[in-house]
Length: 271
Image 1 (cartoon, helix red, strand yellow):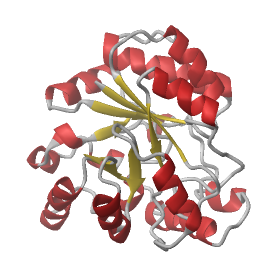
Image 2 (tube, rainbow, N blue to C red):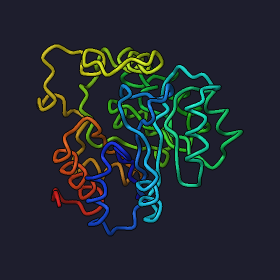
Image 3 (cartoon, one colour):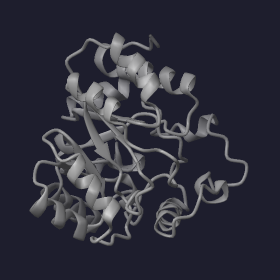
């Protein structure tokens, strides 16, 4: 089993506490957007930078690192982006991307990376999936090592036509099913990074008025429970993603233990 977990450097303290307790043989990949790189997406850039000691701690425990270079705006000459590509280029490490020029550039020049197609590039797909969406996703299966599907498509009947062994299913997404702002919201975040804007809550936080992340109606396909995890495993899913860079450390640790225990041991323990 494989887990893609948020916060390689922004949540390294709770992650290190987790790794001291965690004894299973699953493959852990920790992701983050670092060094205020213009290529970053998913979250607006913050003061998060890689740390050599933290990197060595992870590598000594066979933990890999993924960079969230999921901006749709990519200047392939960017010095920060190219420095990060050089710094983290090793087998097991990964890049989370959507830009096709960057995908081709990395395949040619940095072949050791696993490439993950970001959920942020799925905003144009229909709900439910249509013929053209299935064909588009099948092409992504050829181009990428892993694909993070939108939560609305996780149990879509047409998804049975896809290769779910390449899926990384998000376990604790906090979005709303069928959000009308999905695509434009992630593009606005990416544009903010391209324009080197500082954190802006009006851009990054949910655009829906009175959004309540704990509202029961949002859990139509998100916050995936044990029964649905077992269904996905039976369908071939072998990689799961845990978000949480925006959480407090206690909340993050709670989700980290909860969802890993759900996947590996079929229980809701949080330690």
